[in-house]
Length: 315
Image (cartoon, rainbow, N blue to C red; front, side):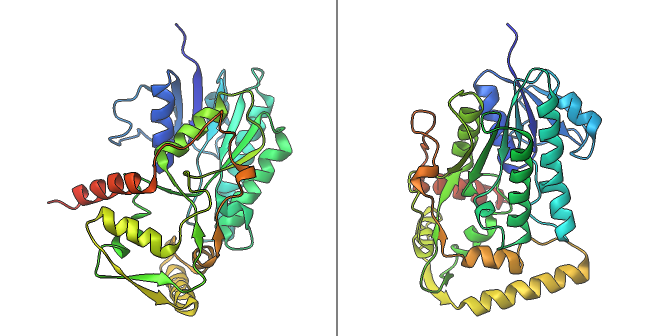
C-alpha cells in the first residue's frame, strides 16, 4: 500500500519533531527538508525521506513538494540579528513554499505554523515577520489550501529555548510580572502537532486558527509559576518585577547581542511580547471541536517537561 506523503519544513526543530512523529503514527510518509542528516532521539526511529536544502533553494523546495499530499511549513526563526534576517526566513521562506505549492499539479494543502504573536505585529520583529509570512501565504493560496495555525506558548520535552521559565520556578523566589497580570494561553507540543495533523487532513479546515489547551482564556503569571514549581517539587515565592526593570534588561541584552554579533531570543521585542497583557484566545478562533481538541492539561504537561529537564541535568 502506498502511504500518503507529508512534506515538512522545520522538521528538525522543536515542534517539527513532534509533527513528524504525529504524521508517522497516523500512517503517513514524511519527506523532510533539511540541511544535513537529522540526528535527534525523537527522529532516529522514524522513516524519513530527506531532501537536502533550505528555504532559499528553489530546486530543493520543488523536490520537497513534488507529489506530496500535504505540506507543513514549520520552519522559521525565533531569534535573529536584524529585521532583514527575520523577514528573509519568516516572510520570504513562507512565500517561496506557498508559491511552489500553488503551482503544484496535485494541489496539495499547505499548513503554515505561525504564532499567536502574529496578531500583534507591532510588538516585535519576530511578530512582524510571522504576520508577514501569513500574508504571503494568503496572497498565493485561498483559505482552503492555505491553512494557518497560530499556536499559543508551546512547551514540552526537548524545548531548550523554553528552559528559562523552568529555571525561574526552580528557586525559592521567582520573578513575576507586576499587576495587571498577563493572561497567557499555553499548549503542549504534542497537542500542537495533533492540531497540524487534523487541519492538514480535513476538508472542513479553512483559514486561520489559534490553538491552545483547554484553558483558552490563559493563565496568570503566578498561576504558571505555581504549576511549574509544583512540577519541580518547589513552591516559589513570586516577587513582582516592575515593567521598567524588564525593559532595561531587554535593552541590555540587545546591546550585548549587537556587540557580539550573536542573535538573542531575549531583547526589547521579546520583553514587549512578555509584557503584553492579553495572550488569551477568542473561542471563535479555535479549531472546531469536531476536528481537533487538546488532550494535555498544563499540570500533566509540565510534569512531563520537568521530568525531561531534570533527567538532562544528571551527570
